[in-house]
Length: 93
Image (cartoon, rainbow, N blue to C red; front, top):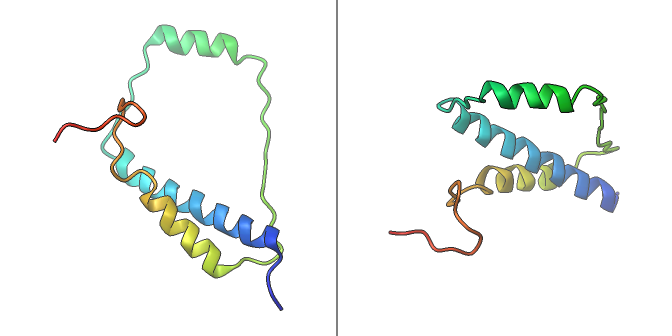
């Protein structure tokens, strides 16, 4: 019995997000973002009334192939990209 199209899409999406998360966690271990106090204060003021929303993706059956392809694509999604590079701009060699 085959997989439902939604299950394949969701399996891929979950894999992609997991792969991307893994890659970003590897990269972020060496980085530390310093947020100025005035930015922290303003965010605290603006976010005072924010609510927390928990969202989940339901997959009745995980398509292992779609998940693994998504995970692989997620890990490589940021390859060759640099912060601040304009869209379509060529990087200097």
